Structures are given as structure tokens and as C-alpha cells.
Length: 215
Image 1 (spheres, rainbow, N blue to C red):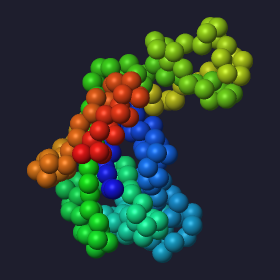
Image 2: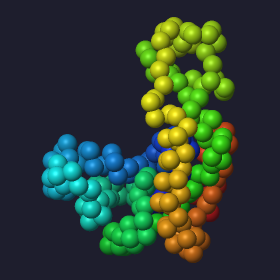
Image 3: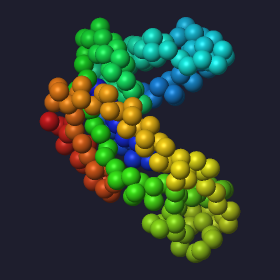
Image 4: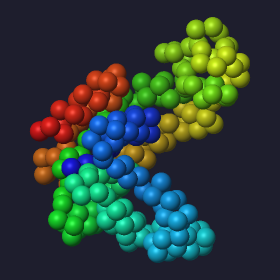
């Protein structure tokens, strides 16, 4: 089974992708991670990408498509893929169809995690972590049991990601809508888009995704 997982930063894609990997043995294909891994490994496509990036240019769709092809060829027989962050344009959606068809497979589901922008802003801007062990907390939803002391390790230093601010979150939402707008109608026309409330409890989101995949 091959699926696309869509949703803006903070919607919970990473968590849900990891659960799909653990339950179904799927492989999460994130273009950013794949690019870094290919460059580090010095694969033919990685070397191409490295040369482009060193010139300060954007990696082309052709290189990304070749990267996707390399990853698909390395899957175990019958292993499915989760596409995360790709495709982002209609042209990339067409390329993905060709890549999959050339390997006698296809896209089965597109799952969009729908979010409420105001709630997402609150969710992301309230996040902070223990500087020592990394345990996550939230200003509203999960404070340490003892104020200023980490529940897990007893640390007293906490930190926030510099990009977890309202302006950045809203900019990401605008970018997400701009990038997904061209591809959702393509998959809607095929009847393979399932939408899930990404603001629900994590377990409820997982259950809703499983229902979509079982169709």
C-alpha cells in the first residue's frame, strides 16, 4: 500500500507516519531526509543533488523523482511507502504516477490531516521541552507536575524552538495551502482522498486513518 500523508507542520504527520511504520512495516519517504541521506551516502542521485545545492540552486523535480525511484527500488517485496512532503505540485503528482506505474504499483490513499488554524497556532506556540532530556510540555495542555521541574529527569532548564512563534506558524499555513491546492483536486477526482480531524486526540486520529486504509 502506498499513501500520501498531507498536513501542515504541527498537524501530527510525523507521529502518525511513525505509527504506520510500526504497525504496517511501511517506509516513510520524506524528501528532505532522503536528500540528506543520499548526499551523505554519495549515491549517483546524491552526488547530483550535492552539486546543485553547492551552487545554491534548488534541487530539480527530475532529481527528486530519481531519488524517489531509488528509495522505491530499495523497498522489501510488498512493503508500502508513505510519501511525506511530496508531491507538492501538479507536475510532481504526474511524475509520481509515472514512477509508481513503472514499478507496477500505484497510489492507494491520500490522507489529509485537517486542522483549525487558531487551534494549531495555540498548539505549536505553547510547546516547550526539557533542555536536559527533551521531554515535551505545553503552556496550556501539559505543564510539569512541579512548576519549573521536569517530571522525567528533574531538570530545571527548558527551551522553545525559535520557529514556534505565531508569525512562522501562520506563514507555514499559507505555504501549505498554496502547495496542496494544486494536487488535492487531482486525487479528489480519483476518489482516493480521506480527510481526518488532525486536532483530535492522537489515538483517535490513528483510528480514523486506519479506517481509511481499510476501505
